[in-house]
Each structure stands twice: as C-alpha cells, then as structure tokens.
Image (cartoon, rainbow over all chains, first blue to last red):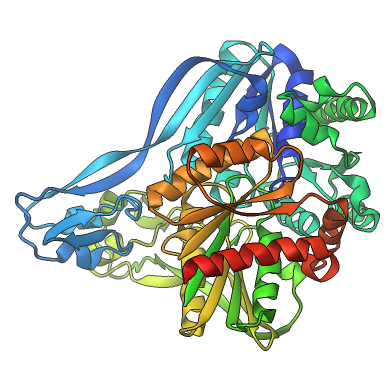
Length: 300
Length: 289
C-alpha cells in the first residue's frame, strides 16, 4: 500500500485564490510535503516558491504528421480524410498545420506513397526543483498552443509520487487547474482528498457546484474553503448550505482582504506576509485538511 | 461579421465581466448592430448568470464516436492498431470502446474492412440560445460533468453562432482560461482577441504565456488591465517593451466586486466601469475600420 497521501486543491472558477491558499499550505507543510503544480497552462506556484531546478526534461506526448514534399503525388487522400482541417495546400505543396493536427495518423494510413511521417510531438517540459522552503516542487510548462495538457498533468503527478516514495515523504500537495475537463480529471484521478477554494459570487457558487458534482462522481472526499467570504454574505450562506447538504466539509471562511494581492506583489505567500488573523485561519485550515485526509483513509 | 474573443492566461481576471458588459453596451450603442455574446468557457460557463432573456433554442450537442457491430466484426484488430488514442481495446472476442479517449478522427471506422465500426452520436453537452433584447443574443454551451474534451463542444458552438450571424453581426466570445487547446479553439481566426489581466505577478506571468500563444497563432490581440490601480506599471512596462497595445483599463473598486458577486450588470450600476468598458469597445471597433 502506498505510504503517502495526495491532496488536490481545485476551484472550478479561476481567480478564487487557489494558488494563494496552496502556496501557504506549502509553507506550512515545509520539507515534509512534495508540491506539484498541475495548473500546467498557467503555472504560478514557482513565482512564490523560487525553485532551484534540479532536473528538467522535455515531455513528448502524442504525434504530429509531417508530409515530405518529395514523393507526394498530390492525390488529396490525406486532405480528404482529415477531420481536423489540418492539411493545407500551399503553392501546390501539401503542408500540415501543426496546431490543428490531432496526431490521429489517419492520413499516414491512407497515403499511397508513404510520404507522410508521424513524429513524436513535444508537448511541454517538466521540472523537478527544490523550493526555497526546502521541499521538492514538480512543475511544468505546457508548450505554447500544445495539446495534451492532461497527459502533462499526469506526468507531473507521477514524478511527485516517485519523489514521495524515494524521499520517504508522506504528503503530496497538488495545485490543480480551473475547470472540470481533462486536466482537472487528470489532477484528481486517484487522489485522497480535494479542497475546493471558492468565493461567494454567483459564478463561484455555480462553478463550485460543477466541481463538487465531478468529485462525487469520482468518489473523492472534499472540503471547502470560502475565500472573500464577506464579499456577499447571502451567497456565502447559500454555499455553506450546499456544502452541508452535499456531505463535504466546510474547512474555513477567509475574509476579502488586500493582503492576498499584497503578498503576491511582494513575492511572498500569505502566511509569510501576514502574521494576523488570516495566517491563523490558514494554519487551522491546513491542520483540518491533514486530519481529514488521514481520517478518510482509516474508513477504507 | 466581426468576431472578438476575450481571453486570459490566468482565470478570474475578468473575462466574463468584460464580455458581458461589452456585449450589453455594444448592443445598446448608436451603431446598434446585432450582437451575439457566446460563452465558450464550456467547462464553467458563467456569462449566463448575468443575463436574462427568453430561451429561443436548446439542443443537445453530440460528437461522433464508433460503435461496435459484433455481427460484422472479424476480429482483425485493424481498428485497435490504427487508433492512436487507445480508445479501442480487444477483450477476448469483443471490442471495447472508450468514448472519452476517442478523438472522433474516423480512422478506425473508415479503415475497418468489414464496416463493423459505424460512427454514432455521443452526447457531450448542451447548447442554449437566448434572446436578451432586440439587438442582443446570447449562446452558451455547457459540457456534461465527466466529459473530458472541451474542444469539440467549443467548435460546435462556434459553428452554431456563425450560422445565426449575418453580415453586420458582431460576435463576442467569452473564452476559457489558460493557453491550451480549448483556448485555441475559442480564439483562432477571430478578428481580434482581448487579453484581460490584472496588475499582479501572477497576472503578468500568465499574460506572457497568453501573448506567446497569440503570437504562435498569428492572432491579432490587445491587452486590457482589470482591477487597475497603483500597480499597473508591472503590466504597462511589459506591454511597452513588447510593443503591445493596451486597449484600456477597468478600475479596481470594491463595489464592482460586490456587483459581480450578485450577478449584476456593472455598466448599468457603476458609471466609472461603464466609461471604461465604452472606451475599450470604441477603441476596438475603431481599430477594425
């Protein structure tokens, strides 16, 4: 049985304070936690954790078609079968539009002269680093306009798991992407506990509902942090009601405070920047989350 | 027909706020074109929370995936060999199909020598079309929970919108966050994309990624600074050094955040926001002509 637990922080909606909260947890967890930034489209954790890169590697996933000019008999077969509008005829030559190509290889199979090659597609880079906190940080950068962010997310998590085992760490903290689609599913599959960071706005509530439904489908226990809680007390109470009914746990309510933005602007996490009530609330939240994560295990 | 996309690297920077408010203002404008606002953030569509109107159409959206015809299949395995996405597997004497892994490329179906894999409709979400007023239509699609691929639904939604648009229609797309495939599907081949950001190091970092994406796509774009205030320089310096135009700024006001939280239309409540959005709208339309 695996000795570590994996906590994933998600939000549905972007900009609710997910990374501010996660980076604070990374500080509170210190060296004992392996941090994985799975928001590979727009990774921000490294801006606060100042990682020293120990290892970096290109990540290939999927394929891209390339048509060689020589040998092409202009039969149009490739262009006719492509469902992604990825083959253009430019000055009489057949050219693959890399951005549109899905890598399905259909063109490769129908080409009568074997002029089409399928090459491995570079979809990004991942990094294994030591953060300024002494913890390991696994982060990535999706190649601009690349496909397959879900695969890169899985790679980041796999590396984090490998490190957890090798370095004998018992906790992995994942900063997840927004949304409910493939990178989110890839961040959550097999996780032990999820934390939803939401805000009391019509959008925050709506989006939380959708991720909560996804978590239920995936059978992952979850807790909720309401950030900017005093922005709209009516919707805050509606969210609290929803949390209760859904069987999730309310972890904490954080106030709408300039400290969040100020901390980021100074390149610090909230718990390092603030020594007042907000840090206290985050500390309590982290303790609760850790307890819940291990508790759920005992039930199984 | 003009197509404007509103995108951002980082989430929560104000895409929906700008999209909704700009659509309402432009529809009210003196030129009074027909405006269609279309929410392409199909994973978490929010624009509709700010608009109220009459539903004029609703349709389930499908994409095509293969189904196995046991009678015709000779178990030759050609399909599993050609599929690059592991969406087909042989289990004993049967073929298993995993629709979530399928990219609807048709290779297995059309290369099957026995025609044993016909393509059938597979539900991915729902599209809704509302009439908000005389000159404003609103279209949104939402991905079903558990469906992983957003791109086909975004593509289908853009197709629908183009069908209901005519020559002098202005289309505004509220794009998903990030820089990967769903964003590209939402912004590609639009006339201009507005990248909305906030003056923080996170905002700047994600703006840089979004700019690289636009350049890779050879897509015309301009920047909008939301929650503008004392730290704007961080974005302005970057835009200056990269020769990127700033279409405008939306001021940081707590009352704007409160209005947003309630689902209220800011241009109708807060004069400073109305003025800011109007300037941005004017600037893009001017640039277009």
